[in-house]
Image 1: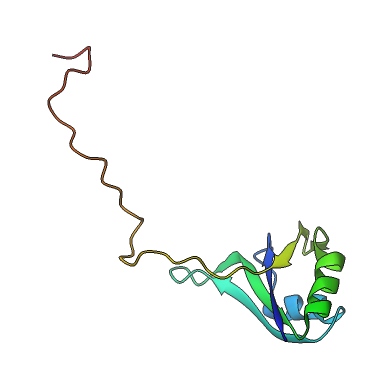
Image 2 (image 1 turned 180 degrees about the vertical axis):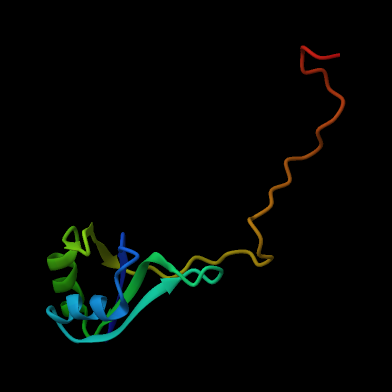
Amino acid sequence: MSTKLFVGNLSFNTTENDLQDAFAAHGTVVEANLMMDRMTNRPRGFGFVTMSTAEEAQNAIAALNGQELDGRALTVNIARPREERPSGGGGGRRDFGGGGGGSRGGYR
C-alpha cells in the first residue's frame, strides 16, 4: 500500500522533478506534487510525495528529514489527512461581538 509523505521547508526553486529525484533514491515514487499558491501561481514551500510502500516511506523519512535540498533543511513526515475546514472562504472572519458604549477610561 502506498504511503503519502508531507515535505516541508522547500525552496521556491525546487521543482516536482527535484522532489521526485531526491525521493527516488529511497524507493519507488508513485507521485510528487508541489503545492502552488492559486493567486500568484508560485510554490507555497511544501508538497507531497507518495512512496509505493510504507517501508520505502520510512526509509525516505529516515534519510531525508533534516537533509538539505536546494539549500533548505527538509521536513519529511507521514502526511496527515487534511483537517475539515468550514466552508465560506475568505480569511476566517471572527465575530467579536458588539463594541460601543462602555467606558474604557480616558476619552469621554
